[in-house]
Length: 162
Image 1 (spheres, helix red, strand yellow):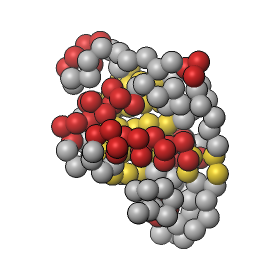
Image 2 (cartoon, rainbow, N blue to C red):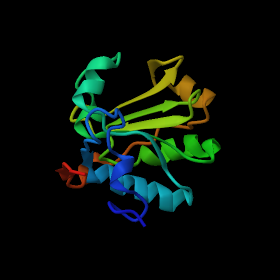
Image 3 (cartoon, rainbow, N blue to C red):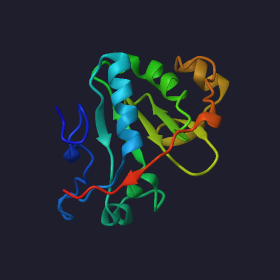
């Protein structure tokens, strides 16, 4: 039993840089989605990357002020990585998720709660490619699944201190 939800402890979502003493910000909506995935697929959901502090964002290449730095993004995988295409399709049904990417080479799914128009992509050799019908077919992602965004639930973001 976790101290944040049934299966998740706070430390899973905390920054791992070692310099910030485990700062933590996480959207409880994301935690709820992970619990849902765990239940649906009867598999532990493994968090590969969650919150990153300001120092990590400065040092890492790529976009600054990304959703990991605000506690609104996760990179996840499962022990059975063969289920990831099915998990991706399931995550497409959540109206709260507006950023969704799949990296078949490194076996993880990125999900975030961006405030912009929903976007889906596939990582190929560490480069984001828009998720086309061709890529969906190549990586067994099936036809596009659209969430009913008119039924979006309320998201409450609570910074959690460890």
